[in-house]
Length: 229
Image 1 (cartoon, rainbow, N blue to C red):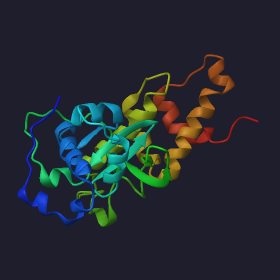
Image 2 (cartoon, rainbow, N blue to C red; image 1 turned 90 degrees about the vertical axis):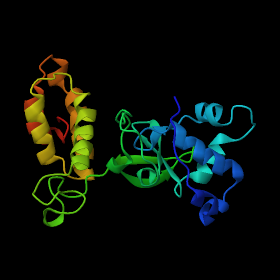
Image 3 (cartoon, rainbow, N blue to C red; image 1 turned 30 degrees about the horizontal axis):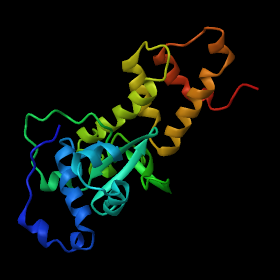
């Protein structure tokens, strides 16, 4: 369902917008109406075309590509495609009753600059360095007291939930999460824990029906980086 958004007079005087087609400009406004309170939506080309240009013959995918990078960012996580409207919260003030976003944030992603036919960018988790604090305990990764910021904590929790959903014996979630936060602190370690889980799930141990509690496995996951000989 669409939402009411505001448009500023400066929109029509924006030089960068003047460089794209009138169709792209109209689509940009239309996207605001169907984004959640964080400026995110699913990248569903046919559906967006039907919502914004129901009576017009336009190439919606090309329009989205024209907007991509400068005005929006198309990205995918786990083969699901999303759109983030750039600087959405700078220009919009969502109503306080709007529900929280249920879509994964672009902030959890770094980009490997690989493009597919849709023009979107494949994303991998952004876990650069120590996720517990930023430099000197400050900056966007920390809040100055040695604790992660609220947004950062949400990103870490999202990544944990992604891999926790794949683990078959969900016992000991709280300690498993603590182990995850302590050991998965970079893009490489995120890739490693996924490799380790795949190796474990394909192991003879699991095939024989012996599955460790989640709290135990997440404490020992690095033992599964090398497959059994």
